[in-house]
View 1: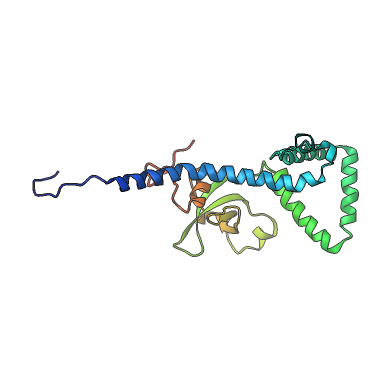
View 2 (view 1 turned 180 degrees about the horizontal axis):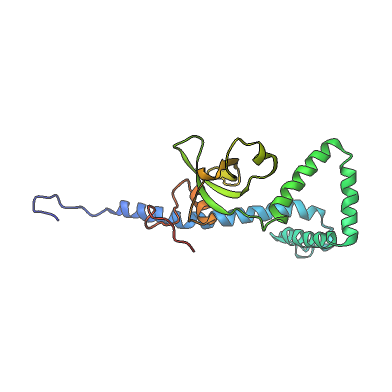
Length: 226
């Protein structure tokens, strides 16, 4: 409520309105432009790696005369599908076992190959194994809370050697703003607080450094279950 003695509220000037519109435009354009740039750059990187390996008579650029972005991606997808189809057959499995037996005899190559293969199988071949739920844990010390992703219950030697009376839970604690890197930690079950928010919402919270909450209208309230 205003009185006759209150100073009159001035409307924003032209510069202020232009500045506000400019910042709003940046918020709208930046995600779209960055996404397009990343996709375009990735396609160019794949083209630059794949096209030199393609024989000239199969390269459409030889007939059209212009650089078509994405042709290398198509060749890569077709080649990958073909290799996967062959690898599922009896001959393909035999060739893979023979090649791996040769790699096992090379000390340095063996270590690199086994590490890359394990990572690839974990990410791609076992895609059905995802994080179970998002959670809160006290890390790196009591009183400081961090977002984590529950993976599985600890098993084997880790569960047997840990000095705890209850069950241990494997929790992946991601870093900001890159959630693909982080720490694998083992917490007693009673120290893990499960959250109602989805894995996707928790990932957005980590990536945005706490700026995007799953319940944006009222971040103090828990997210509604889907």
